[in-house]
Figure 1 (cartoon, helix red, strand yellow):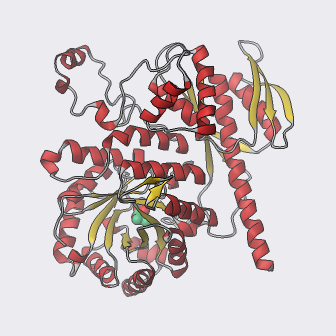
Figure 2 (cartoon, rainbow, N blue to C red; figure 1 turned 90 degrees about the vertical axis):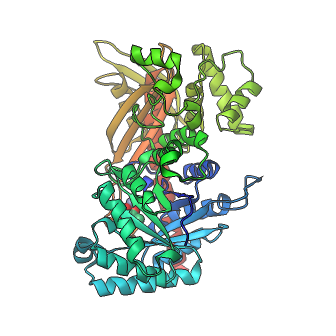
Figure 3 (cartoon, helix red, strand yellow; figure 1 turned 180 degrees about the vertical axis):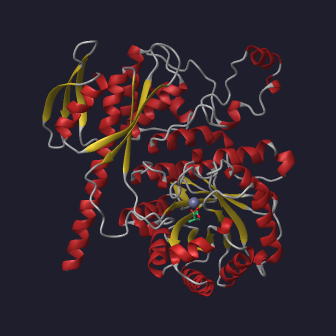
Length: 550
Ligand code: KIV
Ligand code: ZN
């Protein structure tokens, strides 16, 4: 295959990204992320790991049927992204992956098997010959179902080169069209990893029949550097996640890889099909739905990525922006617009600005967001783009409101911080509880707990202001662990990489001009998320029981 100058962007936010502790997304959040990824222009969306659970299968299937097709919500799409599901090298997994991705215009099955000595001996307990045989058999089987097959020799970064060549050759001979080289544990350095790719291209018989892809983890902070070294040595697909989320220290960050290739096109001479002006938007969306905030100094999408503080820098910027800026904020969709709307702005102006920001809301969603906007505009004079985005995500990207905050009153100071909370319960009843806590947030959380009554541990609580100024919106993120989480009897929460079960952590976020209200909303959102997941599971188990007894 001749080397093209196009680098495919394979996004794994919904699969590897979702493996980050607490990043669990609901099916509708996954769908929203997938739609936004499609607008961003990624080539492949790894929508999940279908065999993980019936819910995961359904979520991948939903994305395949509505994002991987020629028209999304009535809007024609010239080239829909490939929709992919991960599958272990086992028939059952591959069948489920195929069931999930087959509605897509361009379906892909991504199957993997570990090849490194440590994984072969301790995890798989398989000899080299057995590993090769399994690769041939399972890639071959997957190819009978789907024309687009990706194979990953897991932990390729620590696999003996000679054996890696054999494994790759076996996969290509069995029909793999993409060979992905994962640095599963983020161990390699850029020169070593780049050399691995070059050696694979020199030594594997038939390598020209497949695209070489890379999937780098960030344990040593080298994921992006390793990915770029790989493309310089001939890789033409890079696996990335928005905001760099993923297992442990995460994956190579989509926005960093894309912008490095774009800004330093003079150096790499390679292109992607990503519309970089959508990067800030997708970063915010993923941060909201996963509850993982972006560090302010994060490259490309951090709040300070385009802020100039030092006087000497500001002076330079005023004279010529290029003195301290290698890319303009608008190239990545980081709007500098400060004053956008106020309390006299009408619905049309509001809808128009949201559409410009990438949220073309209509009907009930627009009504909900506009009501909320008016409420905030009464308290806050200038509503900025950052405020609007916080409001929209607070209204729209929330789990189903099984419990809803109806009213909240807090007294605090040096005496006895007391909270009175009124919640609307799932049966429609309003319940009011008052409690004393160590502080106002503690008192509110105890009051909510008295109504919802779920044994959870609060693992993380953070509050940030969305913009500057005393009237700024406060945004709160929390993570809770359910202490009574039932142990699942099937393999539903098995981490495909480690083979072990993972503890569930549930996040929630809330935004409000009053940080105590934002705190209450965030906590309730995490409990509502937990309850929705639990309800889905119960429905699924009931389904399985009915089928078993039929
Ligand atoms: O890190 C890894 O090895 C993976 C594979 C399943 C591609 O995520
Ligand atoms: Zn991975």
